[in-house]
Each structure stands twice: as structure tokens, then as C-alpha cells.
Length: 188
Image 1 (cartoon, rainbow, N blue to C red):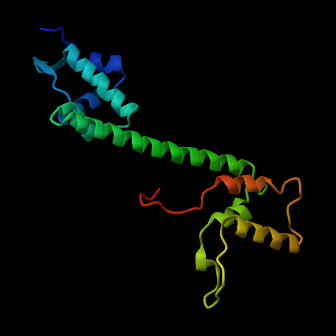
Image 2 (cartoon, rainbow, N blue to C red; image 1 turned 45 degrees about the vertical axis):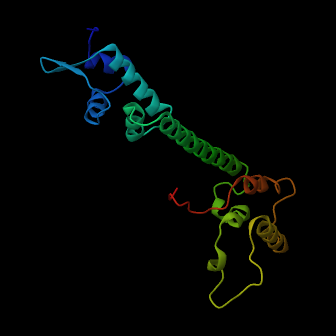
Image 3 (cartoon, one colour; image 1 turned 90 degrees about the horizontal axis):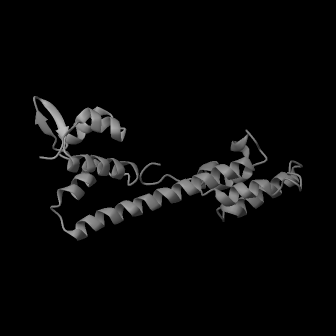
């Protein structure tokens, strides 16, 4: 029989809490050997623990996905479908994070500083629709995006509160990088 490693040693070597290994066992991902009521892992189980850890950390896979992949009950196509789905979800998340980074970078260039809620470029990205008009009023055209920002800038210029020429483009960088604020189906 292969050399057995106590569960505590496996947890320490792989940087996992002991409770994680117990949880994975309860979920059916691991089957340690038992001797005198203590848990031990053979080398195959240690590699399995390392693989589960890697899938959790780098693949961001759920316990259910890992269980499916380890069960070997499905076909190779099932395994590939699970991995492809996880890759697609990671690509979506990367796109969300890139947009967030661009948005925050744009905030740094806004000339309104800490008074960002008054920034006309920010306001142009907020889809208020009819909510910003008093009830009973109508408009022939809905202002959105850059057209709204340009209109806001023209209004500010007419009132004598326009930005100086040297700072006029700085909020535009923000407006160009920030998507319209909307609620996604997932609530993020």
C-alpha cells in the first residue's frame, strides 16, 4: 500500500484549512483512509486535493462543477463543456473588471473632483428618461450620451460656469470610458 499522509500534514503542505478538507470529504470529493479514527491520504488523494485547490483558485469552479469533473460519469464532451462554460464566465468577468478599471481611471481625470455627482459627463451616463422632467411635460427628443453632455456644456457656458479650455477635455475622458449606468440581470 502507498505511504499515507495524515490529513493535518496535507492541509499544511497545501496551505488549506483542515476544515476545507473535511468539507470536501463531506461533499464526496475526497475519500481519505481511516486508521484508528484518523484520516490519512495516499499520494493519489494528495494530488486530488491539489487539483481541487487549483480548480477552486484559478478556475473559480464551484464544488458542484468539480464534483462533476471528478466523477468521470460524464463523457469527454461533458467535461469540455464545463470547462468551456467556466472560461466564458471568466472572460465576462475580465471584461467587467476592465470596464471598472477604465471607469475608475476616468474618474481620476474628472475636473469636478469630489463633487462627481454634479459632473455633467457623469450625469449624461445616467438613464433617467422621463424621471428628470416634472410630470406633465414632454420633450420631442430624449438626450443621451455625448449629445446630452454637449447640451449640458452649452448650458453651462451660457450661464458662465463653463470649464476652462485647458480642462474641458478631462471629463470627456471619463465620459468616454464610463458605460451608461444600468442594472444587470444579476444585480451587479
